[in-house]
Amino acid sequence: MIRVVSWNIAKRHDSWRELVKMDADVALVQEGGWLPDDVSGIDVGPKESYDSHHWNSDWWKDRWSHLIERWPMVVKLSDRVDVAWFRQVSPIWGGEDDEIGVSGIGTIAAARVTPKDGLTESFIAVSMYARWLGPHPSTGSSWIYGDASAHRIISDLSAFIGNENPATHRIVAAGDLNMFYGYGDGGAPYWEARYRSVFERINAIGLEFIGPQAPNGRQAEARLPGEPSDSRNVVTYSTRSNPAEADNRQLDFAFASRGFHESIKVRALNEVDEWGPSDHCRILIQVDG
Image (tube, rainbow, N blue to C red; front, side, top):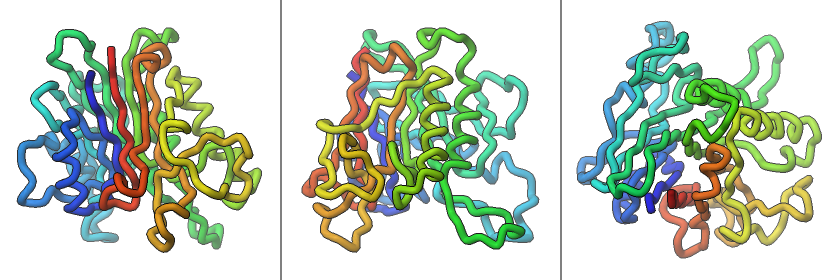
């Protein structure tokens, strides 16, 4: 069994310290920031696999001092696996064996994970971060939304799919999508439709939604407006303005190639006493074959 952890660690050093204590094999990190000096024994891979400064042009330098440091990363946590990271490049046709074309700054990181147990086949692991974007100034709007970044992620992820038969690829993708499942903000049909398009498109390329969903995690005591009464959503994000028991948002999700998903178990580590130092809880993904 290979243990994968997906976690938006909110750039918090204590989150990195907690991560290395988990006896997991691979971490799909979002909002990684910089590794604290006192954390050792793990491998975040080459900067080319997560730091957008390495593949972008210099168009941004007159606007900001840096692009974004809330990188998604694939992190090697144990010697039970080998990890081969994909270098990020601008979207291109095909690319080299060790490259992934990336169309959104700070949205995706990918690597091939090869277990050493002799029982589990290698698979592609993808950390997803649908970072917030805003509309063009011409709209005069102050909206923010994550689905635009999510669609860019799906486009980049589809490069690892080369056959109509999902059994020909083995992919695990997880992370913070900054959206709801099954309903929209404030119960609005408009946002429900936009969010639904993301989940439908992921399914269309051959990946199954694998949770976490109840009973594999604590559900909210009260549902948000528009959330269906039979929703199995679990809490993965804490506003920190309320006690943890009152939180009611799921923003973190996991997906796997159809067929491969049957050998995977997913659980939200979201009980109050296991939450951890980030505003997001950890998602534990167990790969059994």
